[in-house]
Length: 184
Ligand SMILES: [Zn+2]
Image 1 (cartoon, helix red, strand yellow):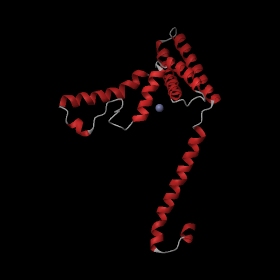
Image 2 (cartoon, protein in one colour; image 1 turned 90 degrees about the vertical axis):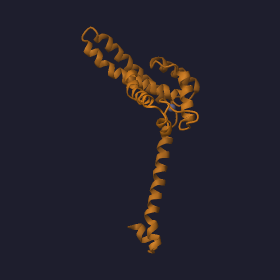
Image 3 (cartoon, protein in one colour; image 1 turned 120 degrees about the vertical axis):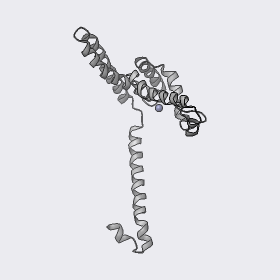
Image 4 (cartoon, rainbow, N blue to C red; image 1 turned 90 degrees about the horizontal axis):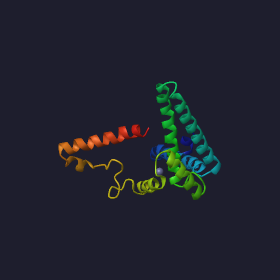
């Protein structure tokens, strides 16, 4: 209502009003987004240590519980696998941040904890982070990088034989559905 009073009441200016409001709200959202990102995009050694510590403590306790549960019931052991998997994925995520040099403030700490978290999540951290940086640098550039599934364009897919198309679909299904489950 207020902006209607401020704007001259010509048909042209009235037609601009929704667009002006839309642009200002988009600008405001972008500013808010930038402020949130700036608040969380700074490495903090204390917070990083707490994240690593809580992950490793809970993971150790869960492994210990899983080992003890063998003497009670295999179903209990199987049940322990789910939280172990989730904490292993968490270790992997922290390792990923170390690879970007963003978890701790110094490269030395990122390398040391990245190595440790890589051992825990079963990943050679340094090699993985080099490949991953290539992915970030070239993602979307199909001349250099086509992602995990070696994605085909529509024309390339259409040029394949029926059997090749079937193989491609199978490969994508296996990669997208089974690999995360296998990792867990
Ligand atoms: Zn990344």
